[in-house]
Image (tube, rainbow, N blue to C red):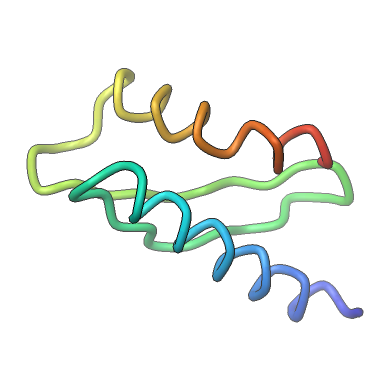
Amino acid sequence: MDVYTKERQLEQELTGRIEEHVPGTEVLAVELLGPDRFCVYIDHPAGVDHALCERVTREIDDYRREY
């Protein structure tokens, strides 16, 4: 699987999970930064703060263990 395909698949999986479990949060993009790192870009109508980032991070902990 090439990087672009893997990145797109990861984005679809994470978007579904985050937007379902953290209401109002929109996933703007997921970027693979390397074989062991990725970054999730999010937005929220009330703004993005550390608490929201922490909540999203906890929601995707099992994915983070893989990277």
